[in-house]
Length: 261
Image (cartoon, rainbow, N blue to C red; front, side, top):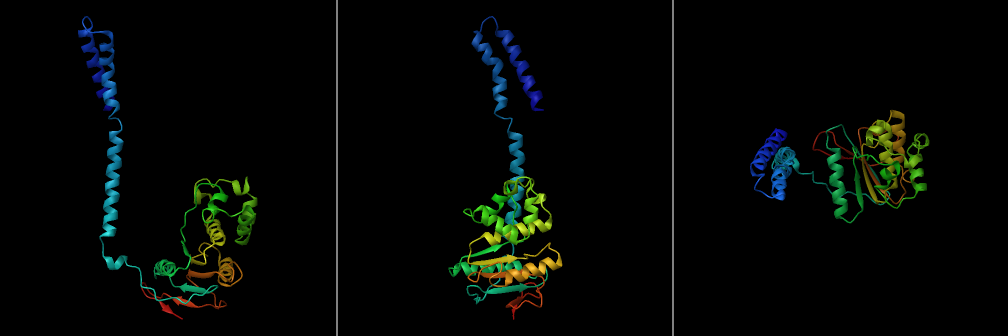
């Protein structure tokens, strides 16, 4: 339709130019011919802009529906003061939907309010379509290659890295789609190891690992001096805690409840 309108305008301009050919100056005729094209050039972006505006309005309505919903449903649980000394370990255990993730985020807020340098590491953290190196440096930009390699080896990705064409400089095409679910989980764990927060809160750090590896990784995370030094506190949300692990537990048996042991 825009092309048809432009064509009709150009033809109209030509007819007007022919009628004025004997009386108008050459520059006037040139302007008359170009005027329809310049007029439509200013409006060619309007259809895409209208589509973008419609999409934005739909997205805005969704956001407003969330922000104007039941405030009780959006409110994070009130977290009692947590006794989590330097080097402490705590497991938050419960089934999916029981509120473990929400509890961890609320704990991170409370710890930061109390001047503890705490960071919540989500289960679905983003893998960027960039190099392996840059995907690790997002958590600590001054980490050396030696530290990156050490973290990848600790989480079991040394063989995977050695098989990449350019090692740390290999670009992960498609971001997380370049990795298996287990590799993605381990790469996210390497990020956590490289971080320098005094308190780390991990949401389902063994998700997508096989049972044996998952229990081993969980044990090393929750054992002071293994993956994390004795000066760093660690909180883990998990579906199941091996019986052999001895650490304080907060159980979330039902959504919205939390019972300490």
